[in-house]
View 1: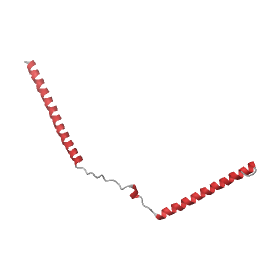
View 2: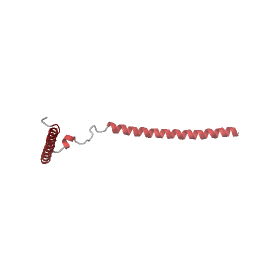
View 3: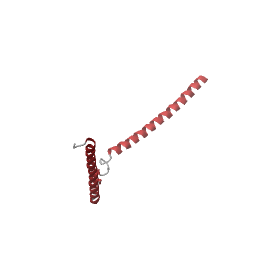
View 4: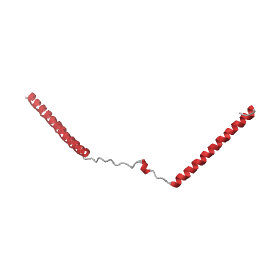
Length: 104
């Protein structure tokens, strides 16, 4: 009798465990299906226009006074470097005359 009672008790416990896991899997599956459905609706109904900042060419503002000052500054710096280069060439020519004598 105890063999039959133990077997029935074991079967009853295993049936309860199986039923619990089955319900857990079923509710989670239903929850996942609902979540996936919600996400797919959001994707399907999403706006096709993506808000983005305006292009860089539009965002650049031109300041005539600043451009004029920069242009003059660049001209002055270029002139300075040109003058320094000419002085260097004169110094090289003078050095050649002093060292080697004569015109080169």
